[in-house]
Length: 151
Figure 1 (tube, one colour):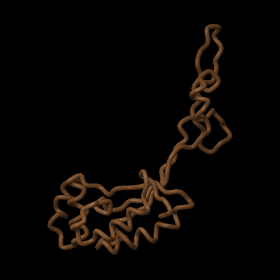
Figure 2 (cartoon, one colour):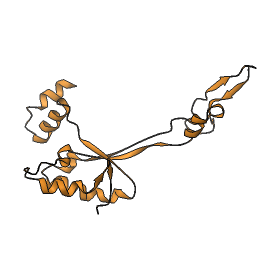
Figure 3 (cartoon, rainbow, N blue to C red):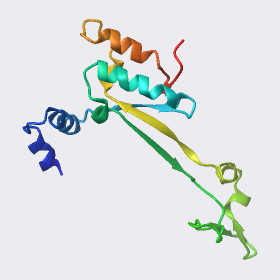
Figure 4 (spheres, helix red, strand yellow):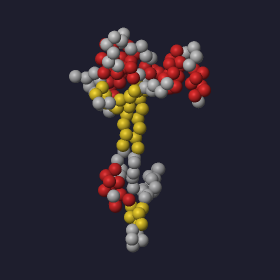
């Protein structure tokens, strides 16, 4: 796969060149978490990315990742989880979440987040940069790795 990325470094498409360079140089896009409430701000952020000279079609993305770390076995669901049982001294089997308060606390709870990806330079504090004003506007929407409503 790296062969293709190396080949694309000299490709006529400038966006492809840049993205290949970012991949090979390990300069991935930065991301922040967003919620259903702050998702309405994404078009504004994409517009600021465009204002900074990046095509938002290629330099922004949204992704979500959710998982159910542990859930009790239920054969009636479409994708049943494997039940973990612990053999007791008397030979009986006990389901793990009934024995562990920690496992019980996470049982049945989905964990994850939604993320918005953009060029890391959007977080630059370099006042000499041509797009410093755009970066400052963009940064008003981010606090502690999360998308927020600016003040």
